[in-house]
Length: 201
Image 1 (tube, helix red, strand yellow):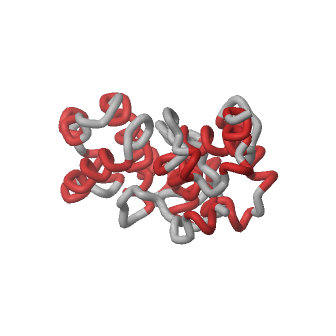
Image 2: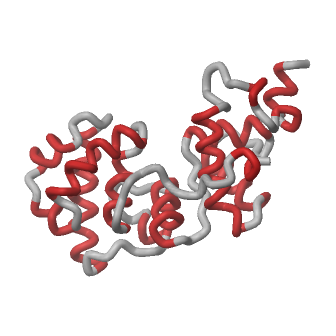
């Protein structure tokens, strides 16, 4: 049913041209909207878009570029530190490996999955707030945290569907299955949805 509702949703809404740009954008996207991140990176990537650029950039300059993004000081520190590690340990190349990515500052399980799925085409399910909420509401998962939700989705979905379903769940969370006042009556899967059935008993 998600395929019927969102047939063409299969890629990240973050704008990027290289794996490194996606890594930076995804670090910035924590607790921020993709729209706000794209607005920042559109200008920043004209000035800096390689590990060398960010490693050599003054931290205050980097902070000024991303000042409109939440917790920008911490993100600036992580981006600069991750850039140095990429230069020193990975020959300035973003690794196409989830465990290696998670060794970088500011990169957790979700960010590593986003980068692997969208930069390298590696099947991945990144569980953000939308995916966590929607997957548990409609019954694809039954978990109380993002890690357990990811584990359950990986077990219940065919691996070939991981990345596409991730994007579909995010879109569904933004369009209909909102955190407050979800538009259940407009949803094609409401009859299958645990949240809908419970709220209409």
